[in-house]
Length: 239
Image (cartoon, rainbow, N blue to C red; front, top):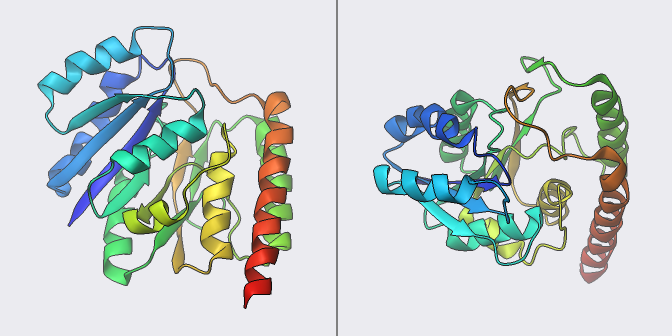
C-alpha cells in the first residue's frame, strides 16, 4: 500500500526541517510514502530550503504553486500525488504523525473513501487552541452539521485522509483559501462517499505565525457553504 502526504507551505522556513523529521515515523511505518510540499508563493526562503532537503530525502517532492492560494496548492498536490491514499498535513506541526499512521491503517482496513478526523469528540486532545477561534469554530461547524444532517463536527479541519481516486473526482476545487478544507469533506458527504470519523489530536503551532485570518475568511467560508448546499440540492434533483 502507499501514501502521498500533501503539505502546503507559505513562509514556513523555520518549520520545514521539523516537519520532515516528525514525519520520518510515517515513512518508516509505510514504506511507500512521499511528502509533497507545495510552495504557495512564499516570500521567505522556504522553497530554497525545500530544494536542498529534497536532495537529501528522496521521498520529498517539491512544487511551486501556479496560482496563488491554498485551494490551488491543494489541487496541485492532488494532481501530483501518485500513491493510493492522500493525506493533507499542515506544515505548522499542529497535527500528530501518529494520527496519520492511524488514519492510514483505518482507511486501508475498512476500505473507506475517506477518514475524517475530529478534534472535538471523545479521545481527542487539544492543546492551546485560541479561545475566540475555538468559540467561532464550534458555532460554525455545528451549524454546518445541522444543515447537512451529518454526524461529523469538524469540517474545517485540514488534517484528513482520502483515496486518491476520490479526491480527483472532487476536482476542480473552487475555494481559494482555508475554506478548501470545508469544501472537500462537504463534497465527500454530499456525494455519499463512504467515510468514517476518527478522533485526532491538535496543538497550536510553536514556531512562526499563523496565516489563518478570521476576519478575512468569514465570507469565504459562507461562499463555500452556499456552493456546497447548491451542489447537494442539484445532486438530489438528479436522483
